[in-house]
Length: 360
Image (tube, rainbow, N blue to C red):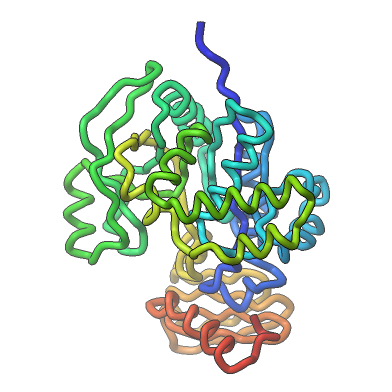
């Protein structure tokens, strides 16, 4: 008889999505925007997509975002959140989530799935989560869900698959290595190899298994998180916050996933977009015959091609330009070539350095 999988979803919902400035701000972070075209926020879609598969959905967020999330998704109260005192990287965030769930349920298995990705093909996504959960439960390994690359992307991490194994009746692969954002020549090799998958940062594991690996590879994180949990059990949130803010900041890929020898990959097939820039958002929309996308607002375009324009309540006129991004909000205007969309982050950094935090 198959053992019941006590599966919980953890949806990390922190940060603001700086490459989607000026729409994405501290007061309106990327995951609380309706970007997929459905009219729903990305976080709401993420919750709806995974909820039928799990006992509970826990949104993992930082303290300052709690009221924002509550206001945008009224049915999601603080009791459905795992709250970080402050943002301290994904190692600490996922460690806090694993310890919190394990305290509630000693047999907890968690699936961590992003709050700010666009996923189309719900059945295929849910199938991948079910398979990953079965493999994680049976093997006690850390499982990552990967997608075969569609093109030689340089903005994503990659996972190299090793030997194929069968666990709980499911096909999985040993993980040989993780690679961060390769140059174009290497990305082309990965695409041709048939052995590489995009790293979606979508993980599934028994909470106890992950914490064993965290204790082994990131002992300072593990020890500090035990202090945080002890303070919370004692009702001393101030002490918990001090202990949490003292933790080193690190990504879980570097701390655990690239060092562990207990890794399996479950391949998946669904449409996935990180929506990491205005260019990627434009690619999600239906363009006119000239390749232009006009979203929220009106535009008069002459000899203009391959441009994205979003100016709610405004008329935008463009003459003789191509590959343009125009995004306006009430207090800010962004204009840049599509090829420089990743550099929008530099604007956010400059605003912070100059003290113009009202625009962040």
